[in-house]
Length: 413
Image 1 (cartoon, rainbow, N blue to C red):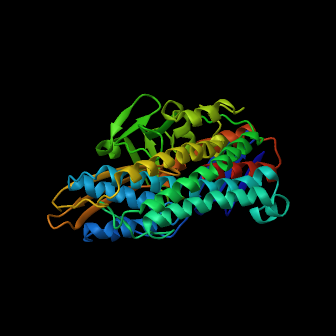
Image 2 (image 1 turned 135 degrees about the vertical axis):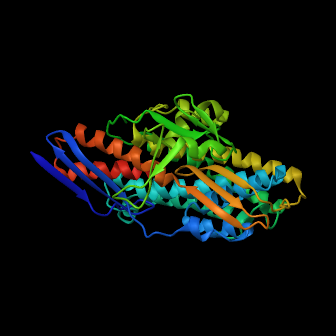
Image 3 (image 1 turned 90 degrees about the vertical axis):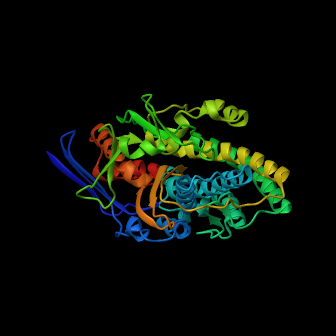
């Protein structure tokens, strides 16, 4: 008996998407996951633009993770012009990333994912019965926003983030505030981790074998090498040789593979190999969880986000303390344009982000390639959806659709 399941509009995800499943008995005959958005042609728009304009332009790819796009572009430009930024600039970027991840992960966990597990259709409904839980989500998200505004100039699309560094350095009093903010929410972050550890996740083992992250999987720590769970490692310059993109006939997002296989990126891939890199405080929290990493259940990406917030908050305090020691400092390195190509890789909240630019001698862009986490996630999510549909084919359509949505939502594509 054939069944066809359609979810025409995925709710509570950062992007826009739909899914179509065709089953015959317990076998999936066809699966189509489509991420739909109007073409924006950012790679074309950057052409002939002066290098200093590029971070501002590409940050508009995403309003939630604009910091990642802006920093990946800045790193690619600095790589092209053989520019090394000073320690203080690197620390400011790391602290900025802490703010970005707190805001993005809190948004996902409390406002997009949690209603599913608490039995509500939206966070608005959930807030009536659990006001303090929702208030915690707002508090964590607000701290992330404050850090981004302080360092970036604005909460969204901060213009203080430029190639070479920042347009201004923070004051000592501002950095002391950051330390206070992060210290104050540490108990809230631990509570978040234990809340998401206590939820009931349905059993699902992903068939996707490969996981990809930067060599250092802690999102705030810079790395120019990419690591694959099968032992393969490659440099940022080799990214396009190993990560292959192809146009999907049913989605406006591209479909990516490594060595012809789907792969997982994002919080679960990072946390699965992250414990050796973590602070002692985070390791202590991990030791108290009932769920264990590494895990092949894609739903535990939610718990992985909570773990990352704990780790990043602890690191954020250290970054701010070191910045105070370095004050006063110059927040920007000077760049000398040339006819070169440059590469920037970074862990965005949803996974590895890649920017590649080529320039003319005057510093104008002659070509660009941007590989987003969404493009890399499509093949992986489709494999997981197939496994889910075949394992739970006995469920009525309404329940199977709900589980499919929960799975996709865990990736926050």
